[in-house]
Length: 125
Image 1 (cartoon, helix red, strand yellow):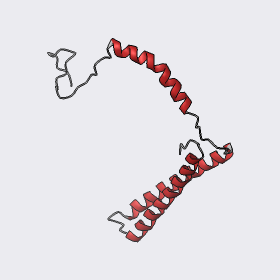
Image 2 (cartoon, helix red, strand yellow):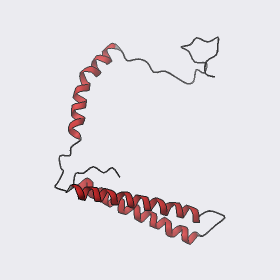
Image 3 (cartoon, one colour):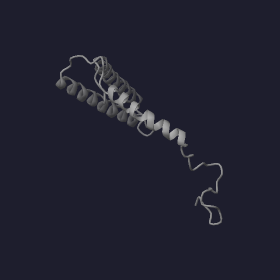
Image 4 (spheres, helix red, strand yellow):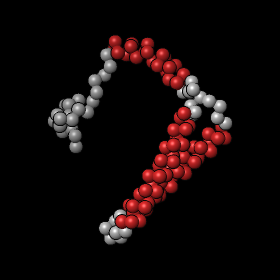
């Protein structure tokens, strides 16, 4: 229990943990109110890439699906490497093989991500 019955409600029993943040001052609220529309319009403009090249939508979808497959198979290889590296199984050669396969699949996914980013596409994995 963080609050004792005899303590004031706005003061925690444990003084080392700060449970509340100071509210914004009136000047800070005015500053945020002035800046917020500009920040949101700037972020809205950033959502479209200026260097986007002509990449067909089907190609973008296919590349994204391939990235997902590469990452999924890499995760599977990592799980297998972890399984074979256990002390009760102890097959270090198999663990090393699947660990190398994991790194290879991650490199494939990274190269595809770099290509999408080079073409100005979003890379959501």
